[in-house]
Length: 293
Image 1 (cartoon, rainbow, N blue to C red):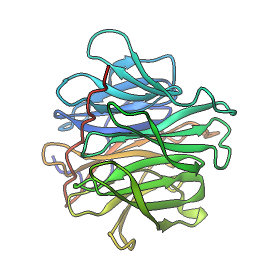
Image 2 (image 1 turned 90 degrees about the horizontal axis):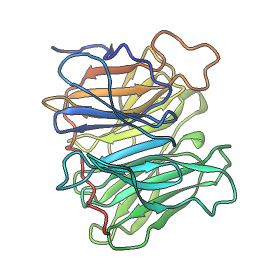
Image 3 (image 1 turned 90 degrees about the vertical axis):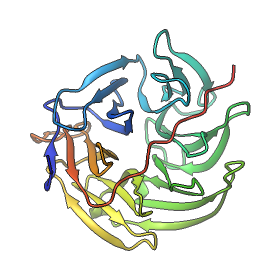
């Protein structure tokens, strides 16, 4: 089944489809504000199956190494373990002391097992968001401050390059990552988008080291070369693409989560899960190291 054009992959419509991951032969995603963890198959379109439903927003999850069915989650005001069986177990409350009401947003594991999670204020206060790094056995580190709505991050195959978006500002920055410690160095501008392009949201790096970016409000996803030049654009039948990943049996199927939230009148495909096949495969989904304790 070859998808040459963006195709609706499910009849479900999400409020905010984010955190897409290809894990153990299935697509994992969240309906963020509804706190829902979902899955579906990657070979043929079908319904979304609910794995968990939380009472707080669920930004994204990463599979836990050595523990099939367990997830490390950016949820509510911190990070929690979602075990295959049993109740949610808090790992770190990161935002309890923040002066503004805030929640976790996008998150991902890097190839070295560290978990990176962004935060934002509900009011979208400029500079009110941060990116946190969690390493088992160490205290959480606020690795990047002064963000508004952080999305990503996305890592290359070696885990030594990180891309981080600040969506309202239309910015994607690139960092060098120390593979041993996770310390960030050498921050540099990678993309600076015009307002009518849309805001950079979910991102993923493919096997050629190119960066795919979902453009919230731009009805498109784009692929950028490592030098920051545009390689290609795929136009979409939904205005707010949010989360993306490369999956399917050969990792060449680009899945795109979209959103209805904030639209006065949602179109027929707003909130849909979309899919299209691309020539270059993605990278395997990185797993988070199991939390200590």
